Image (tube, rainbow, N blue to C red; front, side):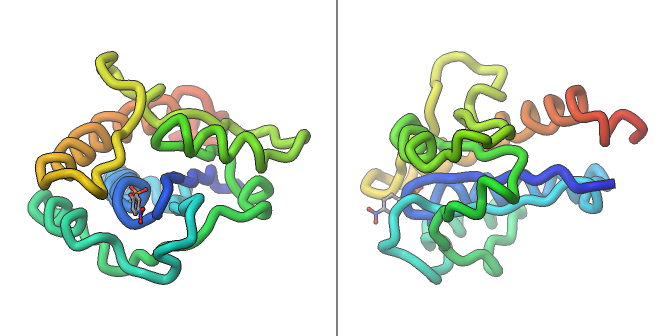
Length: 164
Ligand code: 4NP
């Protein structure tokens, strides 16, 4: 059985997409699905390549039990369109950059993370980098909620998961 693979993408890959990476991975692990679903994250900008997630992101995540210490920033690359079934953008700018890179024959799902969310007030995960500390908690709230929606979607739609 091949794994279903999910790539979360933001701008710097040090705040929002690593949060999604850690939260979704934790959900996958606690549901016993780590052999079925692979998770990764990347950024469209190269300022923080090789860096650990932002300390403010790590602090908020750690308060809720998520460990991000192993994650390092990397760029989205063309090969990602061969590797990932889901490429999920945090905001419309990330999405339009991904559309520009998308090969014509990509058959996976390329879309916005909050399309999987039940709440309808926000359509994008806002960039918290230049804002105050409450922006980081808000990112985590949105990410936790959308992660649950994404996992429910994958369970419903992928034939690999029907028997689980
Ligand atoms: P992220 O946040 O895209 O959620 O990782 C940002 C991190 C760094 C920068 C912008 C956004 N930056 O301009 O360096």
